[in-house]
Image (cartoon, rainbow, N blue to C red; front, side):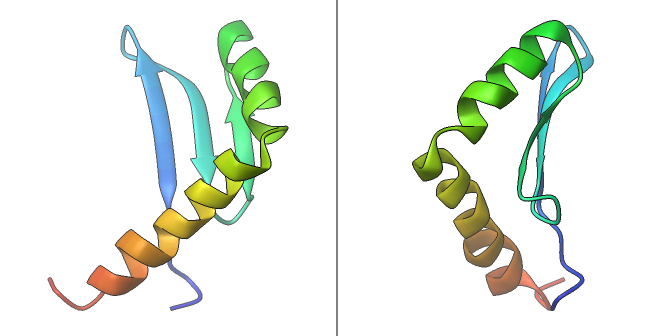
Amino acid sequence: LKDIQLIDSYYYNKLEIIRFESNVGKFVGYTELGVKNAERWNNNPSQIASERAQRETYCLNNVGMD
């Protein structure tokens, strides 16, 4: 269960602009807009806590269902 990783990616016009990876624990921006949003979202503790909780809520509860 420690190897399970949540990746939450956001795209615009087929281009990934921002991503949250549970192993990294923060948002990473890939475009100018993505970098600005990543900085803003990473400074919001409730946003980070929500993303981290999604790993437990979604990934860990559904492992083994497939």
